[in-house]
Length: 303
Ligand code: NAD
Image (tube, rainbow, N blue to C red; front, side, top):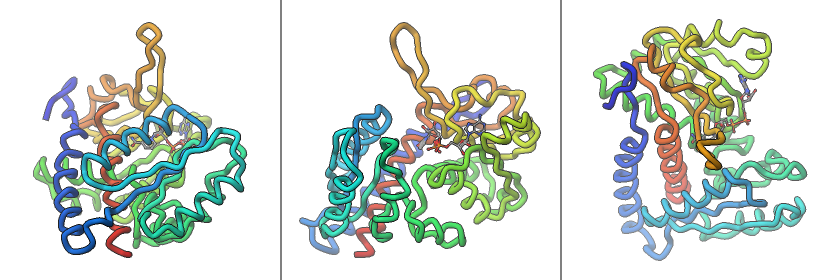
């Protein structure tokens, strides 16, 4: 592993490429056992052209092509009504050639994501946001683990094994602090941390407003940040030896007119104290994309 300011830099691209290799093999054996013409297909639903949703859609199009999954995108104008989007969602849900459906966020304000997610059938909800799937996750027996927290723990498990530790033993004596509480990212990461037997603390914007973020993040053996605030966390927030997983993807200006993406963590600063850290870009993101397709294959196997 490369180092940055004394910390090991966890390479998400390399974790993603071994995962891709395994998934490609699993997809091939799934296809050879069944109908080759029926490739497991992911349908995405895009409303408007928000930058991050469009970029995610493009990455998924490339990745499905690269690995041999099917893919289709239903896109709508920003002004589309909830009824129009729901009609397409129902059509995709009833379409036997579609295994999984992903609703790309953000959606315009007049179409709440909760409303759409409840209309998906749980079997096709590969992002695990339907109340039934979220409930299973909360009970500690998930069917589809949301792809981002799934990627965080895959990266952690992989890193712990590579550094000679037994993940189970490690988690059971560790304190994992998660910043952010959205349904498919922060909250789901908390569920996974609990499922692994860790001691868990959840911080959100209220913790920040109360001026108490450092008090909690400073106790973390593993800090997972999914707040969506550029540079929220620096070395003053963490203790020596923390393993830092940066989920945030935040556009910032510069240099010049360019927009670049940074995480929630000031990577260089946190690296001065961390044992290991994920960079942005090139950390959690690439692994997340593959984890989603793993869920699509899971859905295909169940039909
Ligand atoms: P969200 O806006 O739905 O939720 C953000 C959460 O962070 C909320 O619970 C909020 O209370 C909390 N928060 C906001 N400001 C905070 C602060 N100052 N201090 C502490 N907590 C704060 O966002 P989301 O969909 O969960 O995404 C979070 C971030 O993760 C974004 O930057 C997003 O782009 C990124 N993301 C990355 C991946 C990936 O694969 N790496 C995937 C999904 C989302």
